[in-house]
Length: 493
Ligand code: NAI
Ligand code: CS2
Image (cartoon, rainbow, N blue to C red):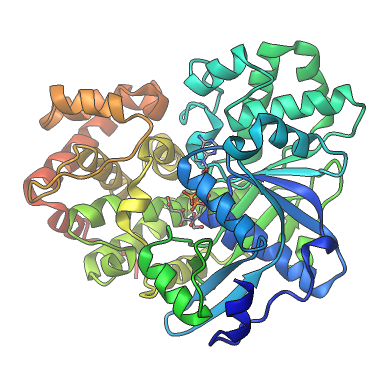
């Protein structure tokens, strides 16, 4: 990377510090596209304007592609590029915050646990996707039957799950008399800090109640709201970055220019001053999280299922269709906003209008298929929590019902032209069994509603909801996604 950058065609500056300035004070689990374009970018900007020495030890716990990324980072002096793509402008940055990159297949469990248990490690942050917490999506409680958790209970010093690594690293720190670290989730879960705490304590209690007590009293788990649309990297993205850099960067990512980070200011062992570069520290993140999960992610999932079924490849393409754009806005304003309670001064209409514009960014190529992934982990916080509020209040929820119907039709794994859909979901086996027994009609809706880790016990028992959902589902199957979205025609203008 070094040489070609020097002779390259772009005006991109390399960071004017090298990794010797950095101490690895943050261990980040889940060095995926989002982390590289969000938390790492905030820290990069902080290093640009201050003499802070916070660096990141990047860890991927899973997959061959995660290992490949770690190997590639090492090959390019731990530098990589981020392309911020607006509708008609691109800004490219070379990010210089990574101090080391680790993977269990390269460094062993020990290498990773040692990094987490080093005295200087003050924060362990996570973007391990919703499923990485091994919890039930409906209740947020640790799933003790989860295969990774079962493994970690029988091999506690050689963990596989993110939760197992955190518990074992905290045990080592306690044994060595070190301060604990803060555990900071940056995943799209409701009350992500509370979910992480419940999962970590759930596992620790099974291992050693005294350790669990120490964690409960010493470790903090701040909630965060994180936002930046970062599509999965494609060959096209890589070519585009290579054309700007004059060199291939297999670790490069592309994202939108917008970024937001709201953080509960509750750290036990210090933290960077991220607020100097645009992050917001608050006492209570939950209202911001709910706003983002329901308005942004809720409408993203709605657009993903119904957009994919309607034949649209990307969110931006879907947004060009008037009925979808109108439906996304009405979903936000008429069905999500009434379920929120934000501090005074937050302009939710302005937020919704900005989301419509962000979703319409043609430069992003954010695939509906990508957002549709892992729906069993996403529906509760995006569509089902607000729906419950409407059921309690007796208010209208037809867009939410159509979004859920969209998921039910999508996981049938066959599109409207009879082509197969590659459904990616940790509950795929359960979904497949339902597809085989109940491919159509009312029975299918009932069978899917009986997955209680998604829908709980209350929703399948609510006859009014089941009737509305079934009606939406049948309409969607008979008329197709585009007509079903058009049928939601009342709008907020
Ligand atoms: P990605 O697929 O690029 O990266 C996922 C990361 O999670 C990889 O490092 C992978 O090794 C790790 N991972 C996956 N399953 C795991 C498991 N069971 N245990 C431990 N690690 C696991 O995805 P990306 O785009 O980085 O998104 C990750 C998460 O970040 C999302 O699920 C979401 O919660 C959050 N996020 C993503 C945004 C985006 O636009 N991409 C924006 C806001 C939040
Ligand atoms: C998306 C999110 O993939 C998805 O499910 O809804 O990753 C979305 O892009 C981010 O939350 C934006 O901050």
